[in-house]
Amino acid sequence: MKSIILASDEVAATRGGLKTIMRRPVMVNWGRRRKRPDEPYEYDHDGVLMTTDEYGDGHPFVDHYPCPYGVVGETRWVREDFYESGYHYRSYPEDEEYLGWAGTGVFRYVADGIPECRGPHEWGPCRDNALRASQGKNFFPDRGRYYWRRRVSIQMPRRASRMSLTIVETRIERVQRITEAGAEAEGVNCCYLGRSNHYLQSPTSFVYGFRNWWDARYPGSWDRNDFVWVITYKWQELKV
View (tube, rainbow, N blue to C red):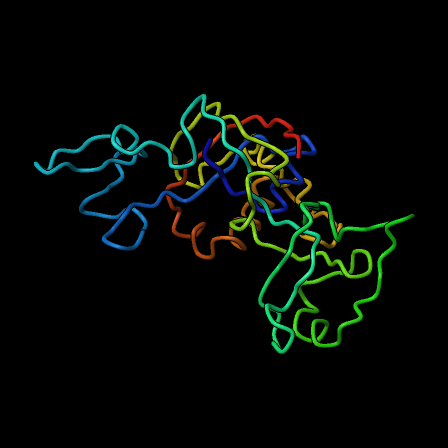
């Protein structure tokens, strides 16, 4: 099973039943890099993204390039930003830096806020001044010698994933073609903002809220009216 990356706000909206559609920019391989589709190799034909073959004939883009985020019926496990409980250690007693990380296999998720421990798992103070000074931004005390280490989504191991997505439908369209119903299905009416535990309410419409969210994530994409993958999905809980 392949994986798919969701931002923390997308995870919160999905698990809250607010988000069933996600959009991602359409990208094509160009040598060693990836770029947006543009002429003469890709072009817009009455709102349909076309691509040319070696003979110069045009064909619908989706006929030659399947959605990289999953085809209809495919299930993918979700990567998201997370915390792992564990501790750093020195390879040798004389080392000045912490070179190793020993995880306990206990995970929490950024979409749920900063992890807490209560009762027998009260937070303990970070007793090592060197660790506190060098890693204070990424570590939160767990219990005594253990700490919550924040990790980005691409670093999530399969065993830490708590949910999966099954692809229901995929298509390509211009980002500005989004409707009020489509923007509502994006979850922008209640968009989770990282660890702040606050939610962004759109003051005028779902499309307005989606545009603000999209511009923050992909600057300039809305004004260019880029082509995007539109992926409809349903999610399932996984045992961690």
